[in-house]
Length: 175
Image (cartoon, rainbow, N blue to C red):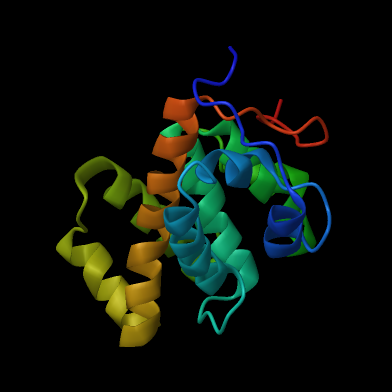
């Protein structure tokens, strides 16, 4: 399937703003149809990925990969497979996140997989999950945990609806 919204050809400013001189990713080149909104979305995305986030990077990537799978976003799953590997996720763990039954996860990681699943299904949490979340994390971290999958669900909807194509070096779904 070809993209429904063709990526904007990159210019020098886009290369500087987005990738420090490298070729901008298709997601950014497609969002660039609305530069102001692209920069706002990137600002929130950067907050989750690097700027003082509260979640451990491995836990964050577990949540993002599970969200990407739940929304059917192969683009997001592929890019976060690469990032997830850098945070210590194994190929087997990444593959488990792309199954209906994600299996057992140790400690808080299992709770976070469950949070993503519940939010993806009902847009809320059961009382039991809420109590476990409150026992495991402080309130600022809970806010981050609850917003993270929503942000990636929003991006997945954009990626899926516009047909953004994966870059050639980006993996797809696990085998």
